[in-house]
Length: 402
Image 1: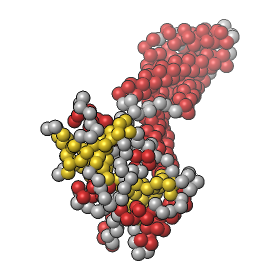
Image 2: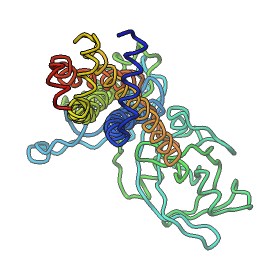
Image 3: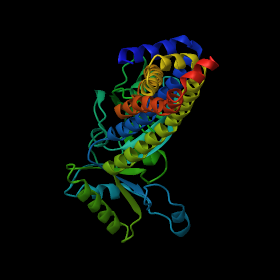
Image 4: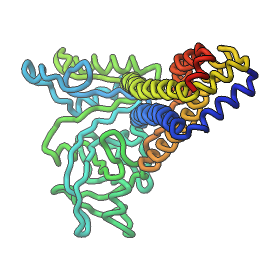
């Protein structure tokens, strides 16, 4: 049997039983679509989180109060000791380090903002003039916080783009007096729109001097200290120097956690990369189920076409030709299902990107290639048994049964 005859046989077999063919194609397409869509979700989450951390700034070293191997809260510390608070003076001491370019102490809290009879709850970030360049924020109007003594706390504020729109409308915001809590502050700047970040929507953010924020929230504690190293190569030295400086200030006690942006990025990249692989593995199980369905359908096809197989053998078709014909049918069903599933998966990923524009739900190339090749390979693998059964059929018995 020539190749053209083999392919024609497989095509006629597939089109001759539309319900059987549709079930096989549907099962395979669902499996491939699941792989494409779920890996788009997993890899999109990885890229989103990594992108958000990257947008925090460059060459960052972050100091947090309390000692923990992961940079979080350690319950043992609450029992054995009370971590020393980070203070403005702690942050100021880091400015003198030779490997450090900028330092921005950060105190955060929520308060009520009012202007012209309009009220709303806002997040307040207390920091210094270096906070905006460290975080890569941009000003749409006005100027940054004054470069003054960090303990002074001038009554000024920079507001997010959404706050300016909601509270001021067409009225110019610069120079206006607003009330935050029980304080009256003058607006000196407006941030460019940038949207939601990691735990902070900058469009709804108010930035004030750090000493003023501490006075507003009746606390002298810092949420964290953000340090920008001179260069990427200087990050390890800046981290070690910051840790040693604060250890000396805290009477030799290592009661702070110092993490680097690169370390956080690498950790999240590995974790979310592993998650994507796990999700792809779970989705691939559906391909195995689809392969079993293809096998069952092909076994039914062998039974239904007993007479046709017997006639082909009586006319001189070899067992190898019969086997290839059925394998070609299995490959054809798997390929059509794989391509259909790829299209459905891409459509699903596109819909996700339209619903969540900031979420980069693009399936990775390796997942697409693996999904398509696994689908076709699975179809061929599970098509071997029906093909062998058809090839081993005795032509006389096949014609008698028919």
